[in-house]
Image (cartoon, rainbow, N blue to C red; front, side, top):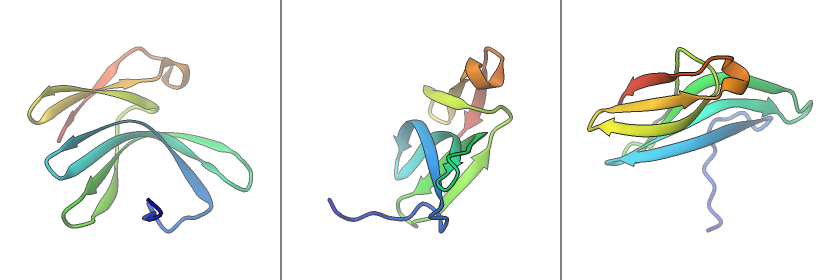
Amino acid sequence: MNYKEPLYEQPEITYYFNNSLVRGNHLYATSSGYHKDSTKEKIVQGKIFHYDMDSGTKEFIDLPEIAPSNLFELNDDLVAIEHSTVYSKKIGFSLFFI
């Protein structure tokens, strides 16, 4: 497969993705941040990447905590998101409605 679709028009940034799930035609992926390719500086964030496969719409959704890692499906419209204790310095989960 040689086709690559740009995530965003920022070729100087490489995003980190940890875990993902697909519901219907929607992809959700945890993103703990990105690094700047020129300096290798790591920026830690807390976001969910959402991609609508029907419309091609892409977006990052902010989370209340940084460094999301794993997704756990709880029911049809709710997931729990585990956050890395290395960066957040906390043990915990966020709840996210999809």
